[in-house]
Amino acid sequence: MWFFIGDMFRIKSHRCKECGDRLNGRCDKLFCDDVCRVRHHRKSNSLHALKRGVDRVLQRNRSLLLALRKSTYAKYNPEDRAFWLRQQGFDFNFHTHVLSLQDGRMAIMCYDEGYVLDGDGILPWSDSCRLNGSLAPSTLS
Ligand SMILES: [Zn+2]
Image: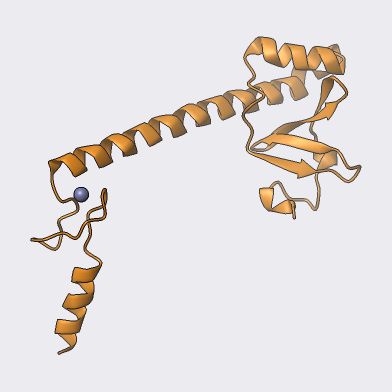
């Protein structure tokens, strides 16, 4: 009796991963047919490609922010720093999270590096700006 109920439950949740239609046949079957299988893998591959592309931009942004903070920071005023970042290929559309600073400004972060908007320019985010000692996005409430 218990096996029968367990089998019934498994059958109810046995649906195609692509279209959601009920599957007939083997219990390890994932798709109703090759059309659904191929469609699912194409979607999955394009999502992975998109994620890799976004991660590449975020990593480059982080590296540029690190370089700005470590070596070129003192050479430039805030406006020139933004120009320098843009010139190096920094993409201002991509960041991981935003931190609220104690003075009311916002730090735009790429993982553990970031910048603070200062008029038309930027200031590199530094440890002294850290709120509650945490880098996690959850510091925003
Ligand atoms: Zn299907």
